Length: 197
Image 1 (cartoon, one colour):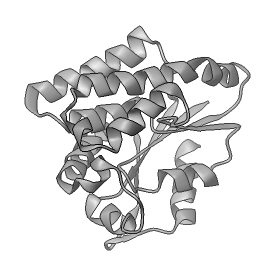
Image 2: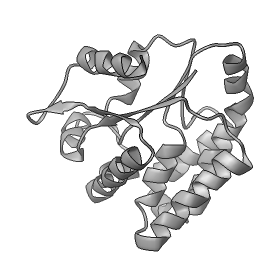
Image 3: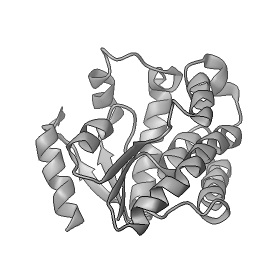
Image 4: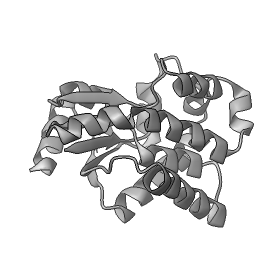
């Protein structure tokens, strides 16, 4: 079974990945690998914002392609694989850089590249941690942020697009905030588990 956890920066994805009992866990991008190193350079420099979202999406897709064999190996053995970010992440983050028809086109192109051309493993369940950027901004105050994480307007656009994608693609939406405060990690974890039954 392939499970993906999605959400904007600072929404608690890595925390939930740690809590989840999976046979194999992987976070994208993989910063210690070739394409992940390129992505890290792009994300941590202002010039990265000026690059074509198609080019950036291509690097993310290639990073995932390099992990395809490993992921498929676990899935074929009947294991549970948990991914922190996947195709939906590229669609939300790169799509947030443009609007209107351009946004629709890049979302469709990423879908074609990753799912049809590269034929990456398909997720059985996608869990979307819905946390508004007003909340994540407070949570990331003490964290070293990349260029995208520092851009609050961009984070708002990514959040809006994530919410749209979650509804269109019928992801499991976990509302992680109650009365303006983030729920406890264990409470969010229990909600995730209940959606997988």
